[in-house]
Length: 234
Image (tube, rainbow, N blue to C red; front, side, top):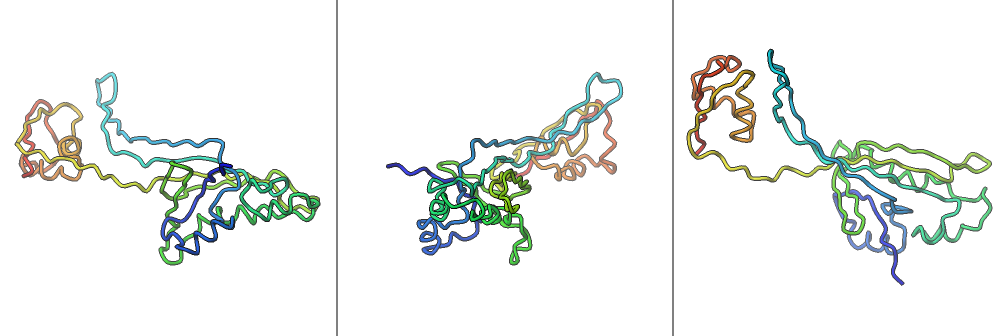
C-alpha cells in the first residue's frame, strides 16, 4: 500500500530533530495538512517605470527591479466526516460520533493561522516552507483568509477553508560581470543616469560613478544628442 504524501507548512528555522520525526510518524504533526491542496499557483513579476516624454507616441519603459515570487493555494479542513485518510488518528476514531461530539475545526486550523504571529526571538513572523513531494517553496506568509462553512447545532465550526499567500524569501544570487572597458553612450530624450547605471552595471546606485566621470554637477540635466562616458570597473 502506497501512503499519500501529505503537504506541510512548517517553520523553516529548526527541524525538530528526533522529537519532530517521532511526532510526524505518530500523525501528531501540526504542520501537515489534513488534505492536500487541489491546486496552487506561483506568480512572479517585474517592475518598470514609465518616462513620459513630450512628443513621443509612447512612454519610454525603464526596468527597475524584479519582484519576489508569490505562491497561492487553499487548504480544506474537516472534522465532521474526515477519517484516517486525514493523517490524524483522532479524527479517524471520532468519525462516527454524534455531531455535538466532533472536534472544533479550529484546533486544526490554528497552528497554520498562527504562522502570521510575530516570533518572540526574531521580532518578525517566521520564515516557513511549503513542502509537497518535490515541490518546496520557502518564504513568508503574508496573508491568510479563514472561511468557516459548516457548524454544529451549538455553533462549533466543523469545516473551514484557509486561503494562503506566501512571498518567496529567495535572494538574487546571480553574478553580474562588471564592464572591463570604457564605453560611450549617446544621450536620448528622457534618458537618466540611473538608467545607464542599471543597464551597464546592474546597479542604479552606480549613477554617481558616471556623473563623476563626465563632470556632471546636476545628473538630472543630460543634453540630448551628447555623448557620455561609461567608465570601466576594474
